[in-house]
Picture 1 (cartoon, rainbow, N blue to C red):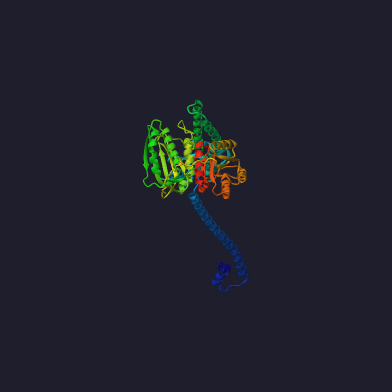
Picture 2 (cartoon, rainbow, N blue to C red):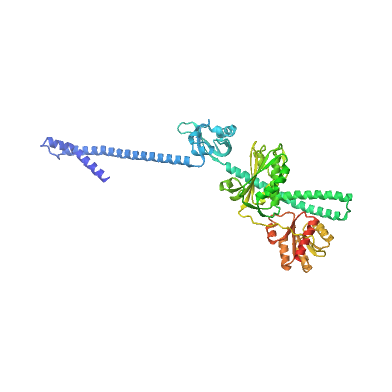
Length: 578
């Protein structure tokens, strides 16, 4: 800047004295600094200074304007690049389209979401054709015309392969700055996985609620059945063989036993049935059940496809057998004209991606059992309700069969996946946690036929249901035992103390008002370590703490119990304690 000013001053001085210098060169006799030259030179310098000063200012302003314009162009290019990068790199679909549906622009996420090879390919499509139902496109246009925008609007759209994609979109109606035409600018997000997970979670919560209801009903019903079966057994002992009354009563007892089976199924569905978990070779168990299952399915044939290196699982084989039988019967029901039922086992590893799409799944190693039929398949609506009690599919009522499958598998820390294709059948796949090595456990049975009689032994009976306590007490007294009854833990401890501990066995319900039966018997055993213990309940859920019952080695009877079983177990316990 100083150099510019110096050059400018020199230039003005030169221009101011240019006339005088010319005169001096042409006329030697003219004085260089006379008044005329000084006045003309001053005026010339002033005019020159003003003109060239104005020109310099103009040039400076022009230079600043050019630089500003260049900076604005660079900023616009930079902003365009940032916009384009954001437009292309965002995971959401960003688009601009005419109301006709023709795309003006759409990012690469649009091609990925709807299954097109490239952005160019989807630009050739019409937005209206991507909607699963064309009426949804017309509704969207109407709402945009009325309100100018939509926020988080959910709609079903189509993937290129034909499957539905659930989309949440936010769109605004605007005027294009260049063409001045009306356009739609918006964003779309694929929420198919989120909606599927929400539906699965809702289904899981619904099944859990039904399970709690089933468990509560079974608990109360089991108390009633215990009373009914107990009095029936007492009356049967008094009736002569061959009498009509005894025959009729035996039929009533059979009905009570059938009702007991029903409550047992309810408990399995509600996850409240105690299980005897042991290492199980699934292939061996399936092969053992094969002949029985073949008799069940009649015209249908069973094909076994068992993995030779299948990992073992920890399971209650009795309950798992019910799962297999119910799945095979269900497959047979889906093929009224006969068909092929395939039972497949394999080792599997559940990935995080699979777990994210299945609410009940967990990552890790699992052994799977798949039961497939070649029937007509199930609809999505039928699959959504297939495990509910007495649900219907293809006109057939499933009763409690598939509900039991769901309850038992969940109780084994597994889950069931259902896949079905219209006209090609349905596959139920059970996932069970694997164990690497199969622990060899020898089954054994001890014979107690020759045990000594235990008449006269004193039993503390703790039961909060008055009817159950009364009939159980009668059954025990009829067989020579002395019974001291109590309705809760506090009364039981008081009776124990009043008898000075002269009790050989305590028979207690697990769930009692106040302190539970487990804490009661542990408290009593602190005062009398050799005390025999028998526990019972209408069901065992988390409130009962079934793991503690097992870990302490306490004997347990599921209600409704019958007199022969009750007498046998009490006799075993008293002999063992002696």
